[in-house]
Image 1 (cartoon, helix red, strand yellow):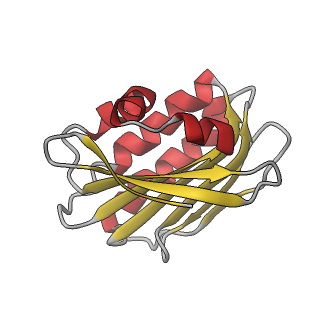
Image 2 (image 1 turned 180 degrees about the vertical axis):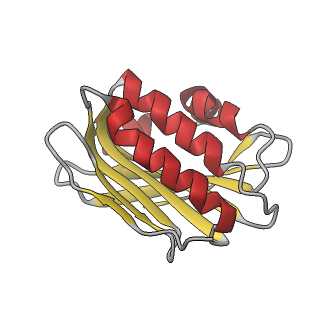
Length: 166
């Protein structure tokens, strides 16, 4: 089997920086994702992730640090996440890191808010093989992280807010 290589795609005004590192299990997409051709950007990412799950790290950190993304991008992001939840190791964990401005972050307070806000994502988790976790981050106007909240997906597929740090 060929050794999987790190995948780095430079950021442009319309596409995010992509930094996928097999050695650390860090999969980072950051910036804006409004490409004219989402498939051209995300097809190599999807291929990389498909190869990665065959020999994944025990902890995979998928960081969606996207200030904005269009519908076409969201479809590809869901496809990527759908592949990651098929890592065939029930004792492994996939942590989905999501970043928000502080106003949006503060609006997500109750269990129902979290479930409603992330139902398109959490629907992907049904039948997931590895453990799944969502971590939310709130950024201030300077882009500094000022709050975070860890949300787990339990075996009954319920979201549980377990901690908030300020």
